[in-house]
Image 1: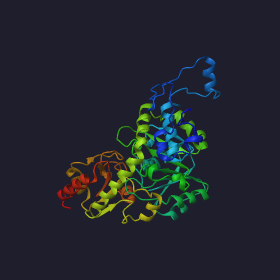
Image 2: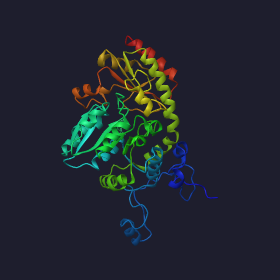
Image 3: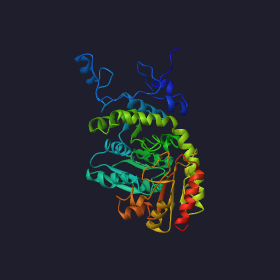
Image 4: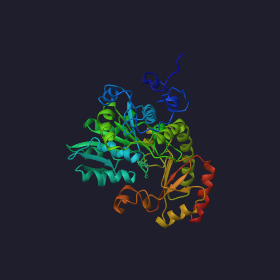
Length: 403
Ligand SMILES: *Cc1c(COP(=O)(O)O)cnc(C)c1O
């Protein structure tokens, strides 16, 4: 009996997510390797000149150049699409390449977009600095306020762009309500789902059109490579995004694609385990610092909505606010022994950063204050260590800064 492949959608879409995560997209070469092969090749050879011409004319299936296609990258694209429940996906070199491509591929001079003000620093930079340079108008709103999204729509508005939970404030956007507002106005929604991951939240189930990822975070999950992905309809991926990415070249390397393929095999387990640990650490911090923000804590201002959209866990990131400003925040980072100081997140190691002086330092103080990135704020990415060791590390470090 012929073994099933991970390429046949009539079979793979019926698989449950855990099966898709380890087998989806897999295409075996003639050698029958069990683990996916890394095709480190920039180009492809043809049997005859006529084949080359036919392939360029789109009359013959096959690959032409790794900026355009690569077998390892295509396996990852198919696996991410399956896990997301998306018709199609395209991978990029980084999460920011994915966000930039998802926006620029469909926007033109004279268009307008609405974005949530709480966002990863570079995502805010795209909205505040890059798009306006090309004549694309932008409005930022409080993403938590459904009416604000509606009120910001203009005749030339093309799309909504937001993260939920947002980096680093963990603001939640009501996916169902905001996607419905967009749909009613004929707009597309672009959701950066890096914090929730498809293991905890699949925005398309709530009506999102395009879901983009920094695969650098929980998809790799072990702090090894940068990668990004954009998921959407076949029409959007093939007819809008593809010509942009093929010709501008934010291509993911086959090696990095392979690393993320391996990461996806364990993503569901890691995300759920790290979320459980994050909740445990957040509960401890909630009683020790002036303010701890974590979606699965009842004290989160949007706890009910968070639980509705992410029923299986609050994610792997916790934010805390200290009253002593930058000095106390830096003091706590310096006093931690186990938790590393790092602006990365979604690693198997617990990492903590001071957004105001790192990831969000490129924004003005006014923009930071407006989105809730205060001088006393710290962002913790909880890893796979025993949460009791993390709590002991925090207990000691908090004492060291007088808490
Ligand atoms: C990290 C991150 C990005 C950028 O991804 P890179 O892979 O670092 O380019 C975008 N959005 C969010 C929410 C992120 O956390």
